[in-house]
Amino acid sequence: MIDHTGLTVTNFDASKAFYEKALAPLGYGVLMSFPAGEGHFVAGLGETATLKPDFWIHNGPMTQSPPLHLAFRAVDRPTVDAFYAAALAAGGKDNGAPGLRPHYHPNYYGAFVIDPDGHNIEACCHDPA
Image (cartoon, rainbow, N blue to C red; front, side):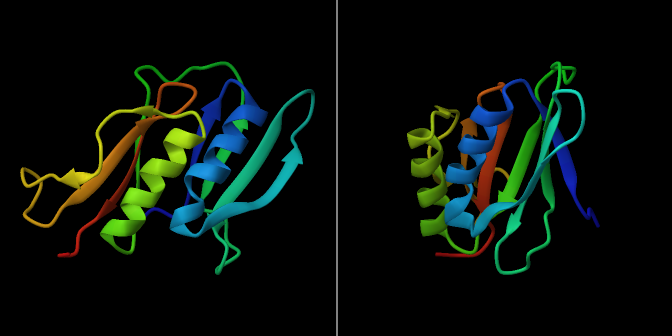
């Protein structure tokens, strides 16, 4: 089981704003943010109900090539839709509108956006409608 993950971003403020808005429908928020020395910054996001950051961003040179794919679990299909709308409104680029992906399994419902650094960010739900 994965406890947390981190992602390098090239523009900390822009990425922090993007993720704060895009992940809000999933119940995520910025739980902590602090300088990490010499122009480096870190933010921990997580479900606001738990107060435990499990998704971290930090600024630095883009060393992840190709860009990463990260998927966040949504409680239901309307939450996937809300994630997609919020992510686009926050400046994300469409990479797959909300819908069923039956090639994964019959109830897989997901949406994909490209973040400011080119990473493929997804919200998905595995439950039937």
